[in-house]
Image (cartoon, rainbow, N blue to C red; front, side, top):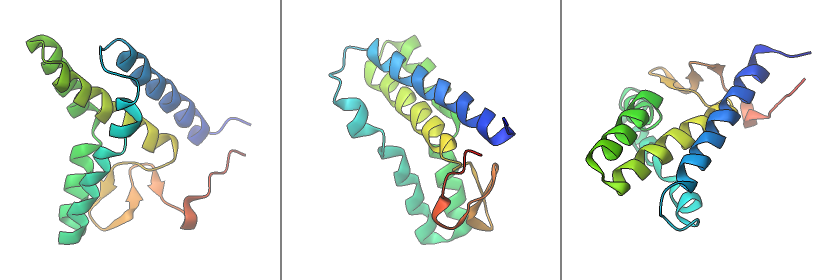
Length: 126
């Protein structure tokens, strides 16, 4: 039975694949993508200053509209590194949402726009 969570995961997998395709259209060596894909998680460092700051910085680095804006700016100005930044931010956001990590509320890292993270965040595809 197809659940809404599975539908979201499939949609996010498609967007993650789009980020890989867009990356393949750049002139960067293939190894840049896996090296940079974890970089947006630096936004979690905001949690060192508390839940409110952490949610802000995490969401800033995982917001797809921001990623699209950065990519578009890089494309418009012809700055490949800025384009790449947008692609990486978009890809990481999609990857996280495939794994049920959504944008964060300010009360807890585990409280996301996709619901509450489970202990161990075990993926259940049933």
